[in-house]
Length: 429
Image (cartoon, rainbow, N blue to C red; front, top):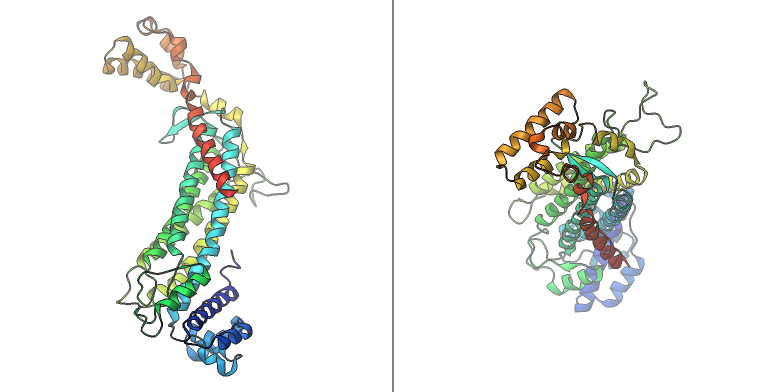
């Protein structure tokens, strides 16, 4: 990812755009074909140092680039940048960078998806307590929790794909998008050579709603990863201790406390998600430019686009490794599941009483009375209910207190997940 956004790679992409434009001019007969062939043969990507040296005089990076390439071409260098404006080169080359960087993000999303699916399958039947508001609710399985992550990663991938497709757009339409000094055919030919679509309409720039959509899609990826990482952090707390990050041999969790094993990777992911979301806001701010263009977007994009891709690429890599090595403590999950003495059966008991003929409010009050006593006094909810003849006489409590009932439809979710994973593998193949 760093190579994609390097200065050398950027200058290389600029030269590719310039040469593609010359090929367009040659096909139209405006520039001699032999001249274009000579330029394509002799043109070299200038060093960033040479461009920077010239820019100290020109105060314009593209102008410095054009001068740096042309100085090695002799008289034929006059055709370089013919009819173009800076944004023709910069925006079209940026689409190439986004395509390459986006491909790496999609690979990262695929790797994360596969890692999560594998662990979800491994723990499809591992019971754990589900929590709402941070408080015990009803049982689920750890695999079902992870299955939800996998579906979200798939949605993230679809969003990124759509945004990348929108960014697969170049423009060689001149200073205000009118083709006054270029030609729509030059744009079409050049974009075709580069594997891009020509923008149906542009000003001096490709409109920035495309870039905002991309940064927002990356921010959603980061936010999903933060959601997963936050769950890992909560489950890793000492009082819960249902999962732990992998802890390497020789690793130190604290400079002061040798016992510490902290969820540092998950915390790092959460912190970087805040950064990427901030970049999405910058992308939205860049949509509104003065008239046909200004360059208020340019300085910001030079930071937020490379950084957003770098951050998300890193987050995906760390998250995948974290999931693959995650320590799952099933014994702690079972202990926590039973920590409330079966209070999670309250809804099943409520519904059974309603089915037996009690009004919902009467049933609710009866169940709540026992639940609050179990909560406050640390008693077993199931025993309190069994000792209440007014309730136990109406119901088959063995059926009510059947723990397997909570996840009896888990296979439906896993069937959907397997279908999605199979579909994804077929696409990859």
